[in-house]
Image (tube, rainbow, N blue to C red; front, side):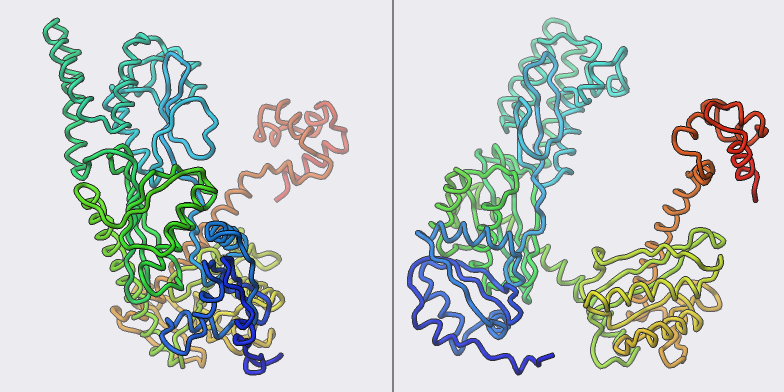
Length: 612
């Protein structure tokens, strides 16, 4: 294998000498041919040259440049086309130095059906193929459910499935508790129901003042006609509407606006998006791009906007986008959105009145969320540093794996493997192992089998090994781990056993070090807290897997273990006797009377069902 020092440096001077000044896209690759970064430029020569200046580069940019082995160029007809091509390449290749939005789910909407006497309200996500109106997008399904809950209590428009609605013979519980008017059994006429639908639409469109005035007028009219129950219902709607307006004091103005703020601190970034529709703040969402290449808010915000509005995610693009920092090449982004999405947007970073209030909210949320994230990361970092000191490691562990075994008196043993890196749990790398062909209750054999399967596979696939392996158990479990590592020829992994201690209470665990020494840490030691967190997560993951495997086994019919008895014969046996218990009580002659069951097969069924 060649050393990194043997790899020739990228000859940027020769490359830049003949590079075009046209707009286009550049792709940077490492020596293995893997893409590192995809960028677009109004002037390719000027942009690519900026990476090779002698000074002033951000450390992350320097790290990128050091890994460049080759650069490929694609010329575009315009800057906007270059931006569209860049986003397509990022989506297809997912380069490590680009901002990657991992939330690819479409945004949820509130859907109001159309073309029927009693329309339905519902949460909707995905293509808008159904006939009706869509209100949103909302930042999360939780925000939709909160709005639907308010609408159900206030205007009582049905939210049940159409299949349920069409087959009701009496009103459901929602009618009993006053959250539905019983349209399924015609307890409300279509005209009165249409009024409730109209009020719902007015609320969703942000016409709260007009809605309030209409409800007051209807309340007074009902009172004059001595319809006091109807007047009281309108009074309750007015009260609920005012309470919502008080909770959303930021509501003012009108129109559809996305407000996006960027906060940058200690190399970490938070981008907070505020969704405003019809003048109402529907909610917000924070994004934390991993390792952004940009070294200022404007550059990071520009990358984010391109992905946010040029992706395939199903969402409405508002006419106005308010941003916390000006972005370069804003005109190219606006044109690219017009070409790709058929929408015209206005990017604005200088606003007044209610838009300024929305922007201030987004900026403060971005800062607070970023500080919270940094605080949690710093706490985790302190735990890792403490663990390094306790285990006398040369450096903090980059990746840790912990194994645990779970079973019920030896039944269906399952081993779990959980993975932590310096950012906490890496749940996508968690694994479970169904343990087979061992003596019931032999935890040592179970641990040996799980470790062998895990690390032989990692070696075979050439994947990274952990720097620290933790096993839940004492010297015996740790000995098995050491034996497996020796058989596989792995010497780079530090081993650690965690025994529960004599009291078997949290805080009194005994650490079994690789050389056999035992150590008990103080209950407030950050290293112990980290070990407990990893061990508890491994235990939780193992127990969950074991219960699933055990329950699946217990749900399995004993008839499935009989050769010659397939699904059809099992069904005939159960139907003939009325259930498995009755089959077990039957004699051989009784079983032989079932159609399709011979005397020989009846004897086999009887023997299996009555075996130990």
